[in-house]
Image (cartoon, rainbow, N blue to C red; front, side, top):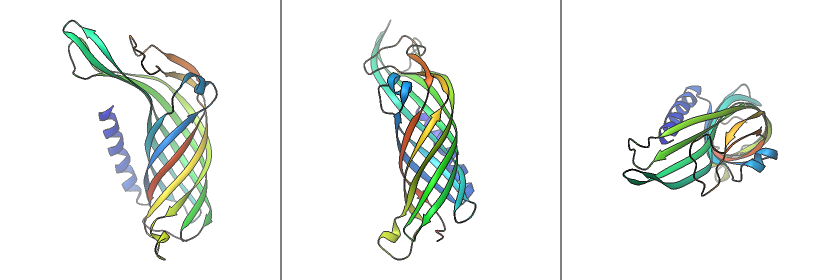
Amino acid sequence: MKTLVALFAFVTLAISIQAQNMWGFNAKVYQTKGDFNKNVEAVPVGFSFNFLRGVNEKFAIGAELGIAMYANNEYEYETSSGPITIFEEDCFWTFHGDFRYFFYRTPTLKAYLQARLGLTTFFSSRTPEEETPEFRETFDFHGTAFNTGLGGGMLINCKSLFKKQPGSLNLDLGVALHSGSSTDYRYMGEGSQSVSLDDGIYQSVTNYIDYRIGFVFVPEWRD
């Protein structure tokens, strides 16, 4: 999981810097809906990187890569040489194309509407505290759901809150409702101990709301 996150962050940062327009980092909380909510008795929490290129003063297009975890178990596993600690995680990563329309603009604030199209891929991992021949790290993908999303938010220019001249750093607050197709995903409740990553598999549509707070770097703030 740590290696995946590090690689994910490096690739996304490299792409966003090349865009030379807007790039940012977000903390995210997800609210699952419908059968997805019934099967997953936890709140997914994660982060994302996004990059946007301004088409003109009102429109921007780009993409967002995100990763979130919604289950994290720790338990003892008996081996011939004694018990070992196992860390088990159920997660998903997301990729969305992002279209934003900035309908309200001042030197301090930009309010926008947002349309999104992309996917959510579910995966799980089991990692021993110390790897042994009897138990090695395992990783498994479960399924991918295609999503459409609608939402909105605002960029608040941090410097202009205190000075007349706007700066490059902006606070990004947003929310988006996603409609997801049906796919397989895994969920093991807290304290559960599984035999394999095939345990606890569910299938349903994967609708969710994501709430975002982050920072966006905009080299040129144009009013």
